[in-house]
Amino acid sequence: MMPEQLIDIFLLVFLAVISIAIVRIRDVFAAVMLFGIYSLVSASLFMMLDAADVGFTEAAVGAGISTILMLATLGLVGREKEKPLVKERIKLLPLAIVLVTGATLVYGIVDLPPFGAADNPAQMHVAPRYVFESMSEIDVPNFVTAVLASYRGFDTLGEVVVIFTAGIGVLLLIGGRRRKEESADE
Amino acid sequence: MSGLGIWNYVIIIFLMMTGLYMVISSSNLVKKLIGLNVFQTSVFFMYISFGYITGGSGPLYNENVVLYANPLTHVLILTAIVVGVATTAVGLALTIRIKESFGTIEEDDLHKMDSSL
Amino acid sequence: MNDHVILRVVGKFLIPYVMLFGLYVQFHGDFGPGGGFQAGVIFASAFVIHTLLFGVRSTQKIAPQWILQVVSSAGVLLYAGVGVASLLLGANYLDYDVLGAYPVAGQHLGIILVELGVGLTVASTIMLMFFAFAARGEPEGDAP
Image (tube, rainbow over all chains, first blue to last red; front, side, top):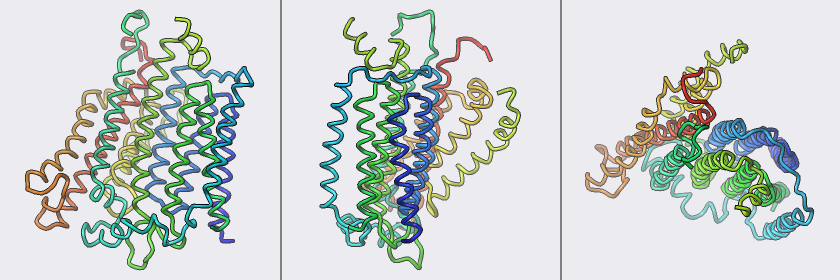
């Protein structure tokens, strides 16, 4: 088996183990650090699947900004341990839901097109036009930037507005200094 | 489908279900947000797996290459990652305000406090 | 962080290089992996390092809140403004072909301006969010 496929298999197993560890661990600080590791390993997996831009963004945003914001929240909220669920009856229901949904989705894998084939339906309709006409129409070597900024410019405008709105939302929620004496401003 | 393909999709579904389980059943609000991020990342994997071509190269123009990975899936996932971090930031800000108002971020205590008001 | 000398020295040394790398990723988004989002996040993380080392107040002296708010709004305005400029020149909204002498030049100019707008907004918004989180626990007044 080629070494790339071995690396793929190993990274996927690593991700599954990390996700189980995040579920089982009760210390929230440790869960946040494991989430940072999860994000970094998934960035490496994106690189293995030939997605350089996406891996770059996932490493910067997931392992960088998301982890930092969660750690800042933990600094403000307190590093408590999560309570174990007291009633066993409640714990079984989410597990049952998740197992049934997972089994249905695994059953649906049979209908998926083969992994990595060049004539999949996803590669057929618009993607050849983006790849082959992009150099003559836009002349930018990075196809992802060409599609992001020019062919699909509206989506990127919406995305910039979304992150701007999230910034406004965060400023409205926790922008001011917390005043300990006043409790009437909530 | 080859063995690697089936293994790929099975692990993706496993990660999706783990994230979903954390969102449904965690009682700590920050762990719920972590579970949401795990779920989102597994969906990104699925999209990138759809766009992957065996023997192709990354979507960067090179004269010697004829087979490129699908750039459309990469663009959709770039947007989704940024929207995901925006959602996480607002969720964490809400968590801080909940802690300041109620004193706790465990969901069971919050339900008790809310229903007793 | 007064007693972590190594962290302070190395962090202070790294901050300009991180900013430079962010600018490199922004302007070379056409030729390699990169673009506005990655560049904005990397640029903001330089300020995050500064905050971790020297505290929120000293970092907010470098990047005051009102400047960040103006810059993030300016990024969105720049993006939408490129579209309006295309409208005024007679083509559809966000059609970059009319922005230059011939279509390929117009596309180049449009993509550079649009990515600049994206990078400005993402960097300043992430800095604003991080400062809001970090300053929430600080007491009132000028305590260091």
